[in-house]
Structure formats: C-alpha cells, structure tokens
Length: 302
View 1 (tube, rainbow, N blue to C red):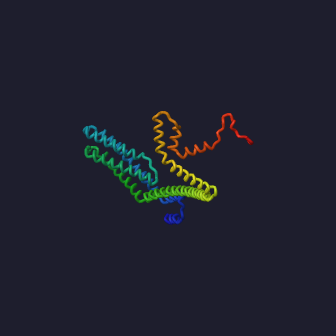
View 2 (view 1 turned 180 degrees about the vertical axis):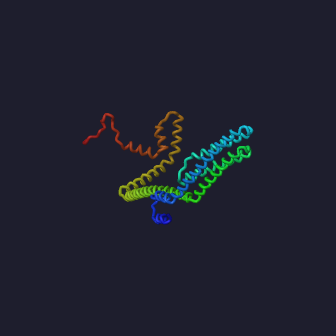
View 3 (view 1 turned 30 degrees about the vertical axis):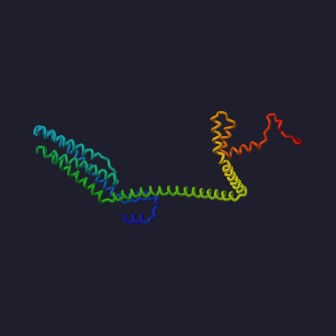
C-alpha cells in the first residue's frame, strides 16, 4: 500500500482533478480500516441485542419473584429492565455505514447509550433482592460485553487515519472553492481592464477632438466674438450704472401717482436687464415695420 501511495503522490495533480484524486486515495488507504469498522460496529449491535435479551429475562425474573420482593423493589426492577431494554434495543437496530464518518457517529451514540445504561444499573441494582442474582448476573455479563465492543470500535477508529482524511477532505473543498472564486475574479478583472482600455481610448479621442477644435479658424473667431460681446456688455453696464438709482426712483414715483407717463415694463427691464433691453430696442428700431395691408412694401424704381 505504501508504494502505491508514493506512486500516486508523485503525480502532478491539477486543482480540478483534486477531488477525484482524494476520493481514489482515501478509498485505497481506508478500505482495510473500513472493513474493521464494519466488523466492530456489527459486534456492538450484537452485544446490544444480547443485553436486550438479558433485560427481557430480568423483567421476567422480577415478575416471577413477585411474592419474595416488596412493591418498591419490584418497581425498581421493572424500571431497570425497561430502560436497559429500550436503550440496548435501539442501539441494536441502528443502521451504520462502513466509512469513518458514519462509524464515528455510531460510536458516539453507542457511548452515550452505554453510559446511560451504566448509570441506571448502578442506581437500581443495589436496591434489588438477592433472589434476582442469576438475572442480575446475566444483565451484568451483557453489559460488560457491550462495553468491550464499544471500546473495540473506538480503538479501530483511533488507529485509522480517518480523522486526518476528514481534515484533508475539508482542505480539498476549501482549495477547489477558492480556485473557482479566483477564476471568477480573474474573469471580472479582465472585463474591468477591457472597459478601462476602451474608456481611455475614448477619452484620448475626445481630447484629440478638443485640441483640434481649439486650433480651428472658426473656433478662434468664435472665441474672439465672445470676448468682444463680453467687452461690450461691460461697457454698456458701466454706461448705465449711473442711471439705475434715478430710474428706480422714477418708477416708484410713477407707480405712486397711478398715472404712468411711460411704459413701466420697459423701465423695469431697463433697470434689471439693461443690456438685453437696449439690444432689443436697437433691433426693433432697425427692423422694417410693415403695415398690415402690405402697402409699405418697397418696389424697385419707387
């Protein structure tokens, strides 16, 4: 077996093949130990069945000794027989597998049942009459047999590498899960990198277009035109600044007299939006005013 394990260990195993490799290795190493688990578990069930039969005979002995036992001793005897019969019978009929995990679980359950039986026997046996000595002896013999079989199963478990293989199995699960997560994160990283490259290329294209636009003749002329407009706006505001307070005072006077001599809307626009008002007035004066009948249309030669 040792040379076979070394041969398997010399191989380079991929992470995706690790679970199958572990299963193959654990089956090969544990097969003899699992056979021992199966035999020891069967011995525990057989001993439990024997103890159950001894408890049935003990119960019959208590009933047959009704005349020689007082009421309290009889009740104690029946309680003892019932408890031992139930606990051992349940253990005798319990199913268990041959692998380490199920054998370990069965061993723990057997230890719990055995301790429960021992506590009950120690509690009631001293209170029973010597007339039940043969039945008590058979019960004690069955209990000793069960105790030895449970101990033998525990020894078989301790002498096997099953606990180490369970730890290895947990590590294999952690490794495979971490590997899957790593692959997923690498895929997401690739998508993010691709998106960053596309965004960078788009940003460079926009910057290139902006640089080209900044050097274009029409764009330069537009910037000059905006600067000229800003300059003219500043000149108009500076020109109208001295008129703001008098115009406000005039507006209040007209409103108080309730007989406006000028257009208060124009006056208010002139105070609040002097540039727009002046520009609108300038444009209106330059636009031709056409009569409604069209008589104002100019003809060639007029």
